[in-house]
Length: 292
Image (cartoon, rainbow, N blue to C red; front, top):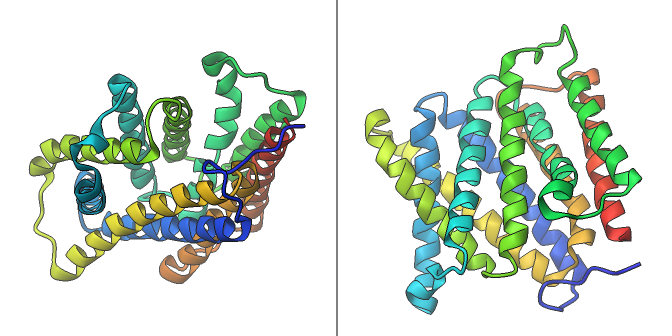
């Protein structure tokens, strides 16, 4: 059995776990803000604000240190594809939040790690064990339980978080390949800048002047997303990815809490069972990967 190591060789697991948990809380807060703001503004504008703030903050942090070298990439087309996959995830998931509660949408979106396991065979040529295939099947069963026929989520809208998970799956696969060529900072900055430019070309057609309060919330939206990504990057430098992977599922817990506190929604028992099945399937896939 091989043992995963932190990206930097530094082993501080407790700090790594704490940073992952903080990142999942920030991602859930980001999604809750997206859901709230989408009730007042077009989704294009909300996603544009998220990437604009993200890119400006990263520019303020990294450009003084590295200059334009931070944008130099050995695989520009792969970086472009990765950025567009992330943009697709943002647009689809934010759209899903208009129709689906926060916890349920987050749970369906967490099919991404399971999809990565399935698609790593044809796309990356990796070997997947029987246990990992079983985890993939269980993940899809969890989604079927959540959107069971006759349930509130048994509508075409549930395809939005599923397609978001598919985009995020390709984003993760490209991230895995690009790690061989570019630094995480280059990849994150490139994605933020690319998506800001794309959304800036679209936002004039959807523009609404935000109120002062909503403008502050849009700043908070981008800050949450950028800070969460930085926390994740630092966490993987401090502890092994296989150790940290299970703690990523705290995001579903935080999404449920924020959905209850801010939107007065509590998943019913059947939905809770489906969410648990998705979580367990993802944890099983991570455990199988760690054994390998």
